[in-house]
Image 1 (cartoon, rainbow, N blue to C red):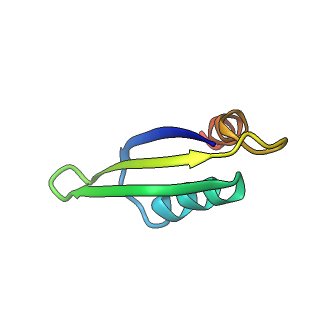
Image 2 (image 1 turned 180 degrees about the horizontal axis):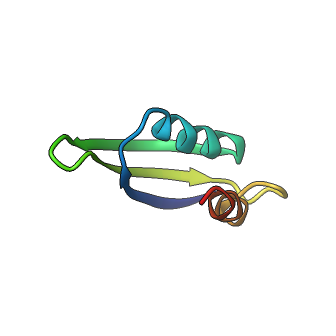
Amino acid sequence: MQDFIFTLECAERPGITHAVTGALLTHGGDIKELKQFDDQSTQQLFLRIDFRVSEEPGNGVEALRTDFAADR
């Protein structure tokens, strides 16, 4: 297992945190800590996730990178 920190800043909209944590679960991720902040004045979401992921075939950080790049 390897440890990583994922950070995200984007426009706030429903379902973002669910999508990110679901992607981590799909790829064998284990969330150690999650912090989220919604800035009401700018309508921005700030997300920081401390997680670990195994490097089993089809899982791992490279598979996550590929999935997140495809969702842009």
